[in-house]
Length: 633
Image (tube, rainbow, N blue to C red):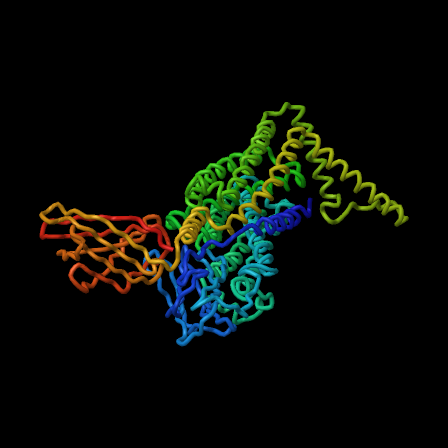
C-alpha cells in the first residue's frame, strides 16, 4: 500500500499512452488550391491551404518542393484569413518547370496539438518525383509518447494533490497528521510538478522536429515560451510552487493546530487559498486546450475549470480515502460520511458540466457513434456509470458505518483503537521498531524478541482493521472504485488529444464534397427569371471557371425570350456556404457588353455546397431574386 500511489500513476500512464495512440489532430486541412492531385495547365501564383479552425504555422510551415526536391516557394508565409475562413499560403517562384510538386505542411492547432500532412499537384502533366517526406507525423514517435505520458501524469498528479488536500480539509482534519495520507498528497505534488516541467521541455520537439535532443536546446525552449501553451505551462509550474507552500502549511501548522480559534482561521485561510490555487491550475488547461476553441469558449472555459475541480474533489478524495482505509483503519465514521456528501456534490457538478461539454464537442447524435471522439466519450460514460454503481455500494457501507453502535461495541472499538495506537507507536509503522527487553543480555535473543513483537503488533493491527465488517466492505468497494478511476483518467486524457466530433464531421463533409466535385471543370448554371413587369422575363447563364475553391473567373449572360443578349438595369451575384455560415460573398461585376458581365476574381475560400444567388432588376421597381446550389471542389 505504501507504493499504491506510484503504482497507480505508472499503470494509468501506460494505459493513457495506449489509448492516446487512437488520437487524431484537432484541426484539419479542409481544402487547398491547387487541390490534392490536381493537374493545372500553368503554374499557379500561390499555393494556399484552408483549415477547419485556427492554427499557428512557423516560417517553414508550408513548403512546396519541385520534382527534383528543390524549394519552389518563396519561403514567406502569407496570412489570408478572413472572418471564419482560416487560410494561409506561400507564393511560388517564376519559371517553374512542368511536373509533380509536393506540398508539405506542419502547424499547431488552436488547442495546442501539432498537425502535419502533405499532398501533390502537377503542372502540365504528372511526373516522377524525388521528394522523400518523413513517415513520422507531427507529435509522434518517442517524443510524442513521452509527451502523452507527461500529460496524463500531470492530470493524475493534480487530481491526487487537489483532491487529497480537499479530503483532509473538508472531511478528515486528523488526516493532516497521518503519514500515509501526507505521503499520498506529496506524491501527487511531485508527479504534477515533474510532469509539468517535462511537458515544458518536450513541447518544442513535440510540435517541431520530433528529436528528443531538442528538449535541452535553450533556443527551442525560448520559442516555446513565446506561445500560448508555453505560457500556460510556465504559469502551471509557478502555481506548483505556490501549491508547495499550501501543502507545507497543511501538513505543518494546520496539523499542529491547538486552539479552536487557530483551527477556524487556518481552515478558512487554507480553504480559500487552496481553492484559488487549484482553480488557477485548472484554468491553465482550460485556456490552452479544447475549451478555448470551438463553440462558446467564453462559457466553456469557466465550466471546464469547474469540471476539473469536481474531478479532483471526487477522484482525488477517493484515492485519499482508499489509502486511509488501508493504512489508518481508525478513520472516523463521520469523516467517511462527509466525503460521501462531498463526492455526491462533485458528481452533480460533473454531470452538469459534462453534459454541456459533450454537446459542445460532439454536436450531433451521428458524431457520437461515427467519430473517434464520440466513441471514446461513450466509453467514458460507461466507466462513469460503473463508477457510480460501485460508489452506490460504497454509500451503503458508509451508512452502515454511520449506524449508532451499542455500548459494548463502543468499548471494544475504543480498546481496539488503543491497541492499534500502541502497536503503531512501537511497531514498524513508526520506523523505530520495537524496543528490546533491557533484561536480555544476548543481542541475538533481543533481536528475536524484537521480530516477535513486530509480528504480534502487525497481526494485532490486521485484526483491528478486519474486525469491522462494514469497514472491510467499504475498503473493498473503494479499492474497486480506484481501479475504475485509473482507466477513467486514461480515457479522459485520450479525449483531450482526440479531434472533437463536431469538428471531425465538418472536416468529413468538406472532404466528401471535395471528393465528389469534379476539379478543373467549369460550373455552368442556367436559370429563367421573371421580374413581373412588362418584358420582365428572360434567362440568366452563369459560368464559373475552373469551378473549384480559390480564384475563379465568372461570366454572366442575360438573354431575352428570343434568345438574344438582353440588357437589364441591374445584376447582382453572391455566393453563400450555409453549412459553414460563410457569406453571402458579393461578387463585383464588370459590364463588358449589353447583356454580359464578368468578374476576374470570384474567390471561394472552401469547397462545399455553395448557394449562388442572382438578383435581376429590369426597371426601377421590377426585380426578382433566383438561386441555385452547386458543388464546388
